[in-house]
Image (cartoon, rainbow, N blue to C red; front, side, top):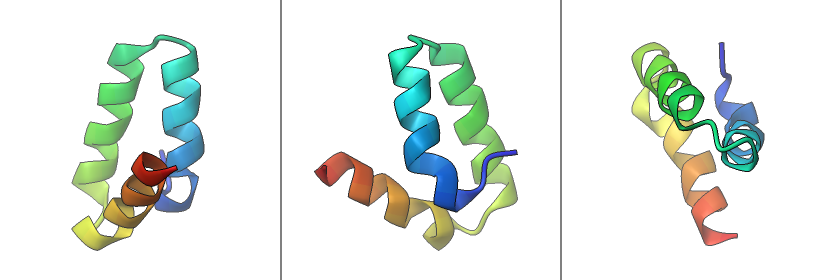
Length: 49
């Protein structure tokens, strides 16, 4: 299970591995198990870096 605080590293790893399926699967899992505000902040920080 992906935790919101590990999301930026998870995204980097999946992009480096060219693992689109793993990326989508992990994000869907996170969406199902987390309130919106817990995962949006790391996503915003990642997109700005």
